[in-house]
Amino acid sequence: MCGIVAYFGQKTAQPILIEGLKRLEYRGYDSAGICLVEADDSFNIFKTSGRISALEEQLPRPANTASIGIGHTRWATHGKPNTINAHPHVDYTGKICLVHNGIIENYTTLKKWLQKEGCTFQSETDTEVLANLIGYFYANQKTKDGKQAPPNCHRFEWAIQQALNEVHGTYGLAILCSDCPDMMIGVKKGSPLILGVGENEYIIASDAAAIVEHTTQAIYLSDGEMVTVGDNGFYTKTISNQQVQKELKEIEISLDQIELEGFEHYMQKEIAEQPKAIETCLGGRIDLKNGRVILGGLQNYFRELTRAKRFIVTACGTAWHAGIVGEFLLEQLARIPVEVEYASEFRYRNPILEEGTAVIAISQSGETADTLAAIELAKERGSLALGIVNVVGSTIARTTDAGVYLRVGPEIGVASTKAFTAQVAVLAMLAIELGRRRHLSCDVAQQLLNDLVLIPDKVASIMGQSEYIKQIAAANIDKPNWLFLGRGFNYPVALEGALKLKEISYIHAEGLPAAEMKHGPIALITDQMPAVFIATRCSQYEKILGNIQEVRARGGKTIVVATEGDEHIPAFADHLIYVPDVCEPLQPMVTVVPLQLLAYHAAVLKGYDVDKPRNLAKSVTVE
Ligand code: AGP
Image (cartoon, rainbow, N blue to C red):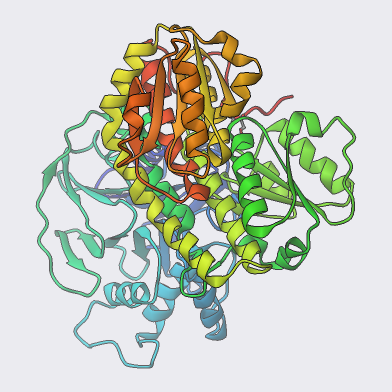
């Protein structure tokens, strides 16, 4: 996810762009840049890796007087977060300059074609491919199959439309052309884009945060629409060149809220974002027809991975819980032995890493010190080191031999939510693809992948229970200790539920395999210790019912997560939360959501800082 902002008007563009980018920095902050249109119509570009503050240090003081410009703050998806990959990007002719929020899925194919046509590239990004594609059609005024551009079309608009016809993917764009300095074009598909309409000035941005201090009048573009801004106003059309009327809307919410897009907290937003996040994580990676998974970052290592004798998964916290789900997935679907290690333990216990062992680090931030040290140890011992990471270009991502990015956008809340479900999604895809390269049949893989692509909708369907789950939290937040219990694939979910509650509501909680209760913890059961059970439809359903009865027989109160339609379970639950039916290996992405909401509401009801809980940091970069 990135932030784009563009200004067209009479004022000095530089400060407007910078302030706008700062309002969008939560969307991504690994590199930033602006392009100003000088009086001689040339592009003056400033860009750098790092935060917007690093970009500000490069800018002229007093500000450049240009009154047209575009800006971008990046959350890298393709290409390291360095200066050369930072936006804006200029095409090979130097006439087209653009900023982009989104993913061009077929950029490698387009890049190869453009290179054959003589285009040159400076960066590793998909965005530069798009800039060159527009530049190619602008320079040649011919379609890909050689047809001349229609004589009466606007050359710049036509080139953009031609290019976007070739593109698969998502984009929010602001585009300039040095031959048409009195124009700026915005286009939207799959990524948000808004046009703020002021007094003889216009601002195009990813969200209203960058607009609302200049005007509260806005046009919200829909997918497949473009807006052309000029000295005589603006007009909108589709990318297939059909005129379209858009109504001006009032931007209502206040600035300080907007960065949360109306949510109370980033954690609440990130819980709610999970359907879209999982969809983006899966995007372009599932080949349903052949029952295969495309993980480009591992392409050169699948031969070695398929022959691995053992995987060691190493991580911390929530990522470690995802790793346990990964262990069950890889062992069940790929039949490769897996061990899951706390990175902080692994790095110091002189582990045995025999030939054929691959080490997989899981880390949202890609900066966790213990996980980084574990990976460095693995590499020193000659093991293949892989990363499942969210932040592109992070230290762990750069240290591992290869990896898979989550692609879920910045996770700002300290309590990890969308990263967990995406980590499980990536592990499921990896297990299925490795399984298919070993013994897993196409039919079984297709069934799993068909279930996997339905997960976003199933997660979305749980969000409607938030207020109901809040009542359950309210009824139990006075209890000082909770137990979380699950079996099989839901055992690590029980661990994750306990961690969520602990880290933001400061209520002590413990996660356990449900059967372990009889080996000690059942001594703790009273009506003052809520026991949260995950009792969804699964191979151990009857067993977990037995565990619930053991708790209830001793006066314990039960909060149960069960499968929709289970009419047997109400008799076992003091509080009951239904979730959609999902095949067992994929259940963690669904059963974790009620537990995230339970923890979130408990913390809010207790009046704590949900996004920045005491003593914690989003990334533990020290031992
Ligand atoms: C989870 O909610 C916590 N914020 C914490 O346990 C976190 O998962 C852990 O520090 C690992 O972080 P990483 O995924 O960025 O490596």
